[in-house]
Amino acid sequence: MVVPVIDLSKLDGAERAETMAQIANGCEEWGFFQLVNHGIPLELLERVKKVCSDCYRLREAGFKASEPVRTLDALVEAEQRGEAVTPVDYMDWEDIFYIHDGNQWPSDPPAFKETMREYRAELRKLAERVMEAMDENLGLEKGAIQRAFSGDGRHEPFFGTKVSHYPPCPRPDLITGLRAHTDAGGVILLFQDDQVGGLEVLKDGEWTDVQPLAGAIVVNTGDQIEVLSNGRYRSAWHRVLPMRDGNRRSIASFYNPANEATISPAVAGGEAYPKYVFGDYMDVYTKQKFQAKEPRFEAVKAPKSSPAA
Image (cartoon, rainbow, N blue to C red; front, side, top):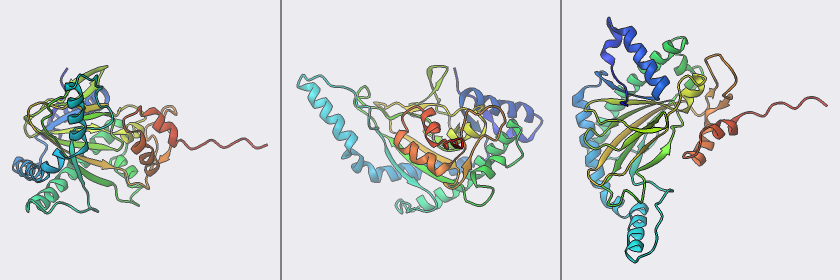
């Protein structure tokens, strides 16, 4: 099985219907797909790769002194002493930091801020274009998902970027790169390493590689798209395996509802999903990220009114 690869340049031409069908298939059958010819200049993507790799080099010493490294070293030492050891399942072998419009960005390397501002502006436009395609495929009015994320324009949707590196791991059998999970938010756009693999998506009970593809943007749907689509689009479980060789770079951007936005199914059919405030969902998600998603929906469900006595 291969994660779908979609040529987005065909969305505005004679092959529009076929391209829309490919997007629908990616959302319905996978929860993941890759976009090529997406309109983001390849030259900009090369600059993004460079500034993020340069940034990690400045952070590398910190990672080598981090808890995952110390924990793995202790396991290996215990094993060498003849002790039985159990793989770690409560932390990840990754170096991460987040940027968004309201926090402090790295000032070194000097080109980081300007490059990432330019990249995020392009990526935001791409996310909104993808959401409009989802609107159309779901039979919703144009802009429906974006309006839901903004509380009908009253709030600004959250757009954040997670810059991750997964350094070479000497014992990938003893720790995970990133534990299996679904994403809490809306539409996620990933610019992943085009040389070092490791990202997998769960499809029909099997873990499938999200193959590295130069210049591509990987799109996956989060829990809020599952709710808005009333289950037609499922948020997919995914994980990152640690690798012995290669330092995997991963730049994931999240187009999420505003914390104040109320989320509920926009597509008719059944009552499988509740109505709730996204900020309340995030409160639950931060505690249950690596657990089944269904209890998260149950936890934010408003209690039904008791019948009058």
